[in-house]
Image (cartoon, rainbow, N blue to C red; front, side):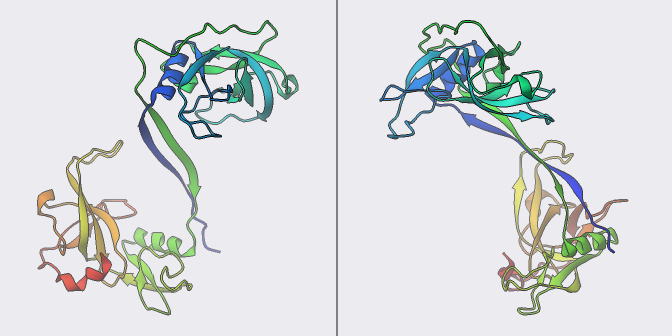
Length: 313
């Protein structure tokens, strides 16, 4: 029985966006311990606020402060909080309709256990000690049996409003390659590159996917390709990536390995970035203990004729 390969992977990047007048006021208000909603043309107050009426699509900007107290409308218990969630101990995700609002806000409710949570229970905001203008300025909600809070009538005008935010986006997952890619990865460990040939169109695909993307039929015939290849197209990278120890500018290229009918991408080294060109002949450079080539470098051969790789652009 062949070994089933798997590996943890993380996709992460900072998402930067500008804020319109409504979202700017809402997030700035959280920084100042003020919760703002927006009033629609029919008098409903939406929290969190939106810039367009979800019923009429009219633009709405009539900001109104609501209370930091409210009522749980529905909830679900989170037995095992994950990295980045509001609380490190078990808590309830709850939809909470703040006093003065007509819609519910999703947030964490800190409670000792699921038996302590119920629909209709009263709660209040627990503010974060340090606030920056984000939904996390509300650290969580907590049970509350006092009188409803009283909004201060804030208009949503602030002296130093936020104009943009940076929200980190991250996806953690475990990847398990299938039969075709497992064979491809295994071959790379021996410093070989293996693709698979389609039994119908006879094209060789690298990396293989187990099926021909053109014909849709399963592939099984393994074909060793390369190791040399041809740059079909490329881009110059001028922004340094986080946790990547490569000085900019550098070149990433699509490379059609000899014998392959699909170009793969890799970094080009051993040549000034402004001398990389379409048709450049390259070969892999391996580092000790690596499972794949570190980069590709020029072979010194004459450039490939355009007609030999134009179908692979």
